[in-house]
Image 1: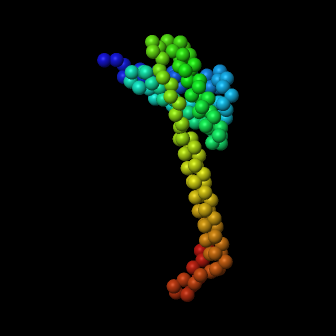
Image 2: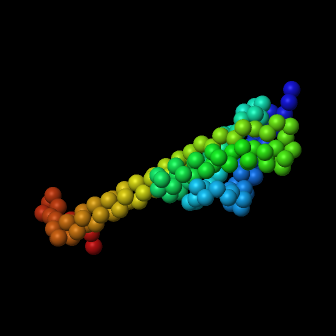
Image 3: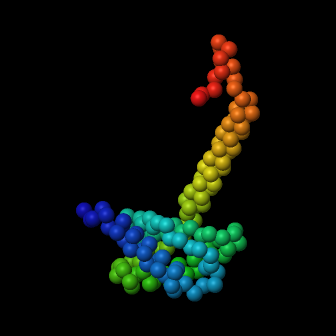
Length: 145
C-alpha cells in the first residue's frame, strides 16, 4: 500500500509553489488585490488539486481575480509538474475560501457585543450613582463604605 501522507505532502508543496507564483510571477492583470492561498486539498490519486484562496477587495475585483486565476491554471499546472517532478501534474481548481471573511465578521460582531455590554454597564452604573444611597430593608443605607 502507498504512503497515506503523500497527498498531504504534495498539497503543501503545491500551496507553497502557488503562493510564490501568485506573489512573484502572475502577469495576468485581472489578478489584483490581496490574494492568499489558504489551503490545498488533493485527491488520493494526485490528479486534482483544489486550491483555496482568499481574495480581499470588492465583488468586481474578486470576480476578476478568479477569472484571472482560471486562465493561469494550465500554466500553473505545467510549472508544478516540472518543479515538483510529478509524473502527472494535477488539474488545478481554484475555490474561494471564505474563512478569513467569516473570522473578520465574527471579530466585528464580538467587538459590537463588547461595546454594547460596556455601554449597558455604564448606563447601569450611572443610574445607580444618580439614585444615591438606597435604603436597605431595615431602613439603613445600603451603600458600601
